[in-house]
Length: 183
Ligand code: PRP
Image 1 (cartoon, rainbow, N blue to C red):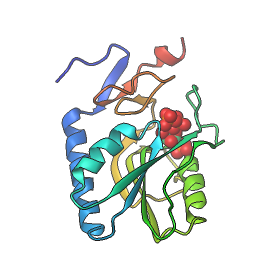
Image 2: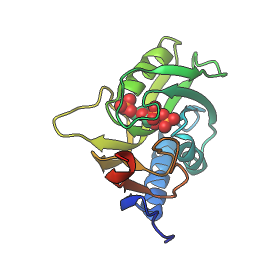
Image 3: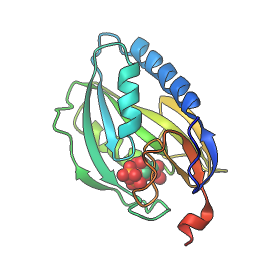
Image 4: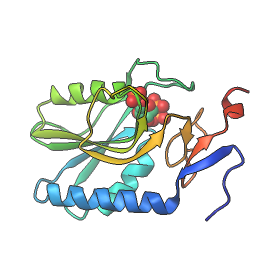
């Protein structure tokens, strides 16, 4: 394994863990969506890495489009404010939509997005979340049909997840050292 970034305290999902998670999710989606030509909606920016891998793990015809929303900005806590920065180019009506997300925290982003996409009358809509934060006594605002892994309630980066736009390129998911964001 490549050396762990010095700003990372510990690795929670290794490259190998990620490979297994994504290929098993891809297999499930391929079974569930054979002949449905699902539209995978990647939520930028974070989900682009996961979506690229997930698409390659899906063995049935599917297409992809992108939406960009912003809820965290450059900070470390979810603000609850969701802003559409880029909308889809594809028509959703009658399509089987799978929203691909890198991390589900409060679920506010996805809850907003799913509501918005539902109003466009898709044939169905489900969520594929690569990771879900384990927050004690807190249920996220939405329930994904596909969940890759649960991650601790800590500041996690890598595999698309950033802190102030950094660390998205790490091939694993790790906990960021607190001194990095309290600097
Ligand atoms: C992150 C993440 C999800 C959202 C999850 O996005 O990618 O979209 O926050 O939080 P929630 O469940 O509490 O709503 P962010 O706004 O940081 O943008 P990014 O994808 O560009 O990193």
